[in-house]
Image (cartoon, rainbow, N blue to C red; front, top):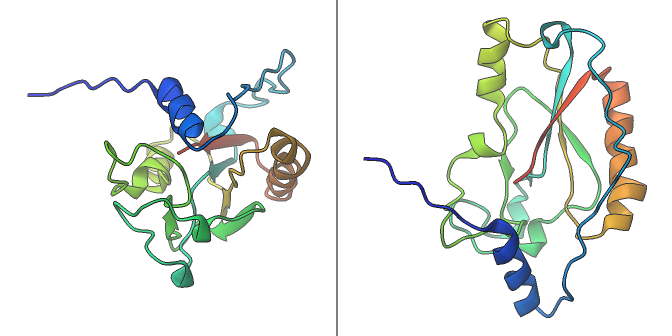
Amino acid sequence: MRYLIMLNYIDRSLQYYSELGYARYKWSQFTDVPFTPLKAPIVDSRITLISTAGPHVPTAGAQGPGADYNAKAKFFKAITLPKAPTPDLRISHLSYDRKHCMADDSRTWLPMQSLQRAKQNSLIGEITGEVICLPTNRSQRVSIQQDCLEVVGHCLRLKTDVALLVPT
């Protein structure tokens, strides 16, 4: 038997940050989004995986499944890692609903096996050789003026046609 559990992410996030003393969050809004149609079918496109997960930091304490929030594992610049061998990415540096999520399935933030299967089945084109880790530093200004520019630079260097963003 399957159960569907609905979690109101936005309300929970607002409550969580309010309890930490933050002012009510103002969500980013963009009327002109710089997305463009694909220049070629996705099966002929180069795909780069971008994740908000970050690399395991051995000196930063607990970061595995069920770990408490771990600010020591946080990172502040976009990082690229080779896609093979599959990088050891973790999410303990992120605020997420730890009551309902054990964070024990890395495929939710790094779906590399699914992408490789899609490639083998001729559903997508080439997967670029690096994964981009995108920091989440709670600053729209830093995200726009620093992080996005770094990610775009990496995507240009990797000759990316399609960026697949996997937020956690």
